[in-house]
Amino acid sequence: MMYTVFFIGTAGSGKSTLVSALSNWLEDQGFDVGVVNLDPAAEYLPYVPDIDVRDRISARRIMKQFKLGPNASIVAAVDMMVTEAERIKEEMEVVGAPIFLIDTPGQMELFAFRQSGAYLIQRLSDVHSLVVYVADAVYMQTVDGFATTMLLALSSRIRFKKPQIVAVNKADLLSEEATVTINNWVEDPEALLESLDMPQYEKEVLRSVANMGGFVEPVFVSAKTGEGLDRLYHKLQMHYTGGEDAQ
Ligand code: GTP
Image (cartoon, rainbow, N blue to C red):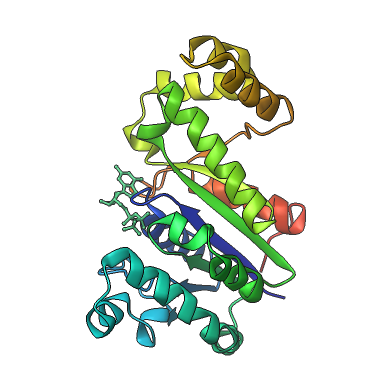
């Protein structure tokens, strides 16, 4: 049985660093972990992937060959990756790790909000698959940042139709007070709505989202210091096995 965990998030939220930190952490705990890079435009990766889409499809090469801009070349690369899905899946089976962490392209909209991105996730998913939505702690500590992060995480949930964990990364840059404030907004959305300067109808939309459980309790992590990786693992474990170790 294979457990696949996809990391989705806005550019620079720390997906690659978190994949690296969590894979090291899991290995330290004795787990056999596979890592897949699905970012065709990555210039540098903080981990050594078992499978790297850039071996076959590189946004940089496409940019030169077809004289495309940086975003158009990533869009073209992600579309081309669809034809590689079967092969990537076979390679994952050859690697044979029980858990795979899958890093996705930097700009989430080029992946999440296109047909090919959702197709790739469906194709590479096993029975047990889940999305970690990686949010940026610094951005999330403002009222607007919190509200829009929750809406983006919701969009990602609608898009991928997978169980999802919201990981607030870069927690090392948050004061204790800011962490408490964010948790309060999750528990008491009215406090957040009061401090939002926006038209009434926008507040009503947010209120509905919050009341329907759209403001999910996040897990605070730092890919840099390793803080919270145990909590993230615990959440993953609860989703996959109801608490049993995924060995
Ligand atoms: P792209 O794929 O390039 O869009 O980014 P990404 O989401 O994969 O982010 P990446 O891992 O490249 O990290 C972006 C920046 O945030 C880097 O400078 C990281 O060193 C930094 N970073 C990542 N995680 C943390 C963290 O937990 N704390 C702090 N302070 N910085 C972090």
